[in-house]
Image (cartoon, rainbow, N blue to C red):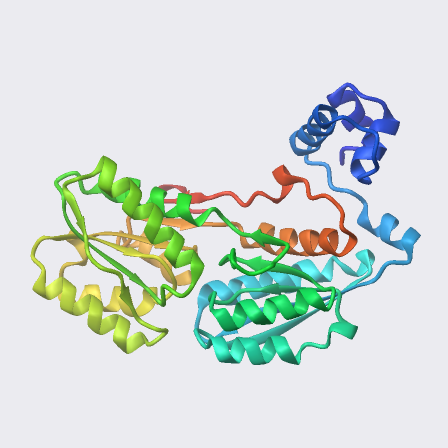
Length: 340
């Protein structure tokens, strides 16, 4: 059975009236009590009946998701999860449209954001590299009164309302810990990504360097190789590194592009001796785990990501509080032995 407000009141040791005030962000409740109620909500897995609340207010949410297009399996999986989540949002009185832009093209992102009609929208979720032009476009949307959420890759210097995604610095630190444990002998590590203009890659590299510098001094981390979403470039860089660097012991793939990366490492004949760590569980990385071509994949629940983005956008539209525990996207470490 789904938990109710009665269960929350019992769990938190407060009255039903107090639970109602906390859930609806009404004044008159102490911070400690609010925290206790929110902790009870998280423990019980309570989800508000947004349909009833929205229906009572006559509220209808018009939301847009701006996502990169192209051969990116993670984005395809995220989009499918978003469409699945949207199918359940009809009762929540929300309409959602997906706008796609060329990957790694900030000018195309800006054109897409400028093309949005603020009079026909309440909120926007954006997955895009952080550039001055994108920051200016986000500022314009905020000036027009829209709720704005950064999705997967943060826009910390833009006036967005919130970031929805994993802690990417912690994800990079996790990748470094796994690499160091799988390659205790030390050696060189190749780091590859689409572009360091994407904040998720920048943060992951930061976290990776923090841990390798302090905990694994035997590892020598090479400068980040960027493919700029060019599969041929990714394959060439990986193949050249594998063939010319005999001390190479590991590869950390911070973004997409795992297909050409793995193809290059197979062609080099060194894949079975390298520790390869990547991100996001896709058909390609799943197969690589099964075949022992990747040691581990750092993943996030795309279903949770999509649902959280929708909830956070609605909360931002209403200037309502967010239940932190419910919206925290967990970092998951997937190995061959625990494949879901």
